[in-house]
Length: 112
Image 1 (cartoon, rainbow, N blue to C red):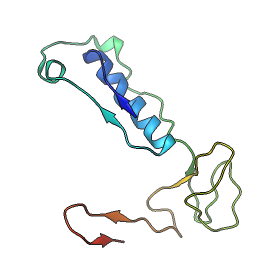
Image 2 (spheres, rainbow, N blue to C red):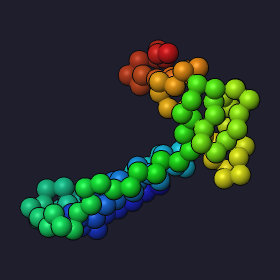
Image 3 (cartoon, rainbow, N blue to C red):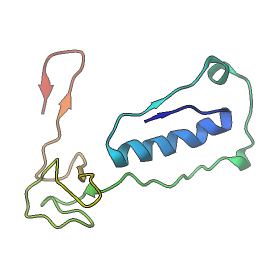
């Protein structure tokens, strides 16, 4: 997913939308910004900003048995589960019974 804000006000709107889209569809996201926007001295009226944007990050596994709010499970976590939407639910870090892996990019080791 690639997004390019057109002005400073759009920057405030694109980022929360981008987080929702890339988390929901579990894909990478890139926000393209040019030098004029990043170093510009423009202001935005605070009334035009939404300081509590809606958060909708897709289906999450929230319990230790692999069940989520809309998926029945037999207790096993299937990362690539075939669903009606075509997008498998994600396990979030800290859910009991699920292993969260962190891959360190500056070394060749994997932390568990």
